[in-house]
Length: 197
Image (cartoon, rainbow, N blue to C red; front, side, top):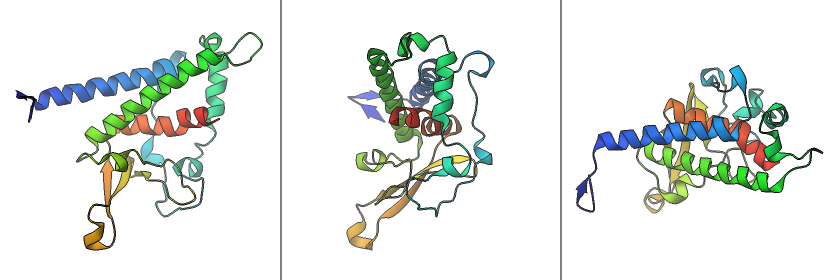
C-alpha cells in the first residue's frame, strides 16, 4: 500500500494500532476512571456475560441482564474518594463546570480512539454512516448493534449499497480484538452512563 508515493508498511500499521490502543487505555484509566490504588485497572470478564441478541426491549442491552447497570454511581463514589475530587467538585460538593467541560473533552477524545480502533481493527473498514451509527442500547426505532458473543465484542453493521439488488441490507458482524473490546465495554458500562447523567 502506498500513500503519496511512499510505502506504508504493515509493521507500521501494527505499531500505530498498538500505540493507539495503549493511549486509549491510558486515557481511560488515567483520566476518565476515578479508581486509585490496587483496583486502579481491572478487566471485565466478557466470557461470563450473557447477551440475548434477540432482545429488542427499549432501553436494554447486555449491561441490564448481567448486573452491570448503574455503574455510574460507583464512578461518582470513586470520584469522591479520589485525589482528583477537587478537579470536578468544589468544597461544598457542587460541580466545577470548567472541570466538567475538560472531562467531557477527554471523553470525546476517548470516543475518537474507539471509532478509529473499531474502524481499523474490526475487519474490512466500514463506511462512515455504518460505523458512526452504532447504538449502545435498544431504541424506539432501532435496536442496538453492539453485542457480546462468546466473550467477544461484536459490532453488527448493515451494508445498504446492495439493497436495490437484494431487497435487504447485508448484515456484517465485526469482531473486535480483546483489548479494544474491553475499551468498548468499559465505555458502555462506566463512561457513557456517567456522561449521560
